[in-house]
Length: 355
Figure (cartoon, rainbow, N blue to C red):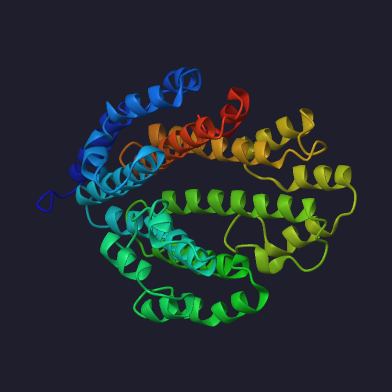
């Protein structure tokens, strides 16, 4: 790959990922799983590309925990395999995208340690897909306290934010503010990377803005649901198509109808607007059904990526499209297996799926 120049590496990557995309689990298979028992679903997963990880982990884990860890390991390996075939520029941008897993893993470990969970329980839900690899995460799991974990992360690029905000997390007994500050810094760095003149940067910036908009809208809806009408700027991430001031003005609106009317006028992305219009028409806001609204926002994000991947086949878009679809394949399989284990109704499990 290193010897290839011009458009050849982009064509190679686009072709490889289109092939990999055809191997992802289709919607019809998820619907079939919903009508199967948990042992049947487990056997089905063992017959897929997850077999290698299941066999490798079978001596350390059992039952549904084995499936969960195998799914996580497979996702991390898939991401690393994709990185291995990317040319310079695309690789750096993709690595920026994958650093969000570091935030998720660090916060999962901190929360787990604060709650006194055993390292093995925490490890089951970690996904070593970012810069902090499996060896590093195992080392953090062996650290006895959250405070020592913070110290052990001195070399992490987001350590300054972690150090600055951790004390507040302890004082408030909540990692929510820390999480938001870490994502703010992550997105600021990603935006800076997209503007460094690398091929595909402009397209990547368009995706990042959409993702920031969706994250901000989800936070805004949750804050309204909690009747939070004060200063919400600390919960919002700069860089999207909404200004922080616009989001604050929306948060201050008292009545739901006025909020929805003004929100419509502020949404600039047509597919995003269509989702909000549909949610309003179905009464999801009035019913306080935020989960279904959030799933709908995620689906529009995936549809937008798929459209852009077809429109720009030799850019960052096919990479993002595949990585996100793979992530939600893991998400869906976890939702189905955990839902079946908890004896949830089929329709309820289905509502959690992104497909």
